[in-house]
Image (cartoon, rainbow, N blue to C red; front, side, top):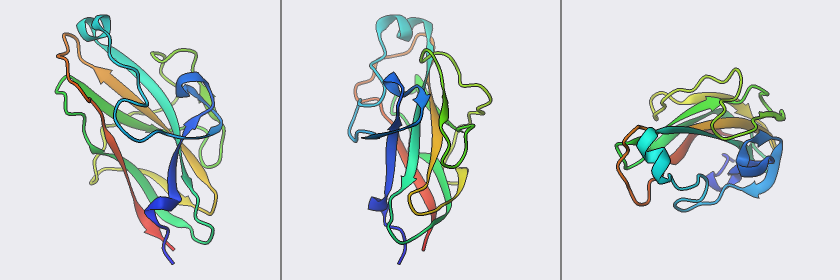
Length: 160
């Protein structure tokens, strides 16, 4: 039986504001504007970069999620912002590094723009296994306002 979409969960990291650390017991909220804070006026004028860490976990009780990969499925609707992804340095089932502030890049993480055709490979996620992923939100200087500025992450792979 293949891994179902409902078996794959995105979890926050333990550190305040999801700035790294171990896997949390809280699933990343679904909906708009729930993982990153709003871009304030100063950030919109000068531009900013902010980082968040999350974990992808296979909660199937019976199957491996083979060839797992993650990508930005729906890009931000604002032309002034973008999101890139990077694999956590701790790897499969590891405790990811922490950063002290959202604007400090995690050490050793390479961020890339992703798509369904160019996802980041996580490898196989066995039963109960998880992998850390960093998100980098980039706000261009002189950014224009956009309500409900969000991204949707997608996963590819082959369950069972």
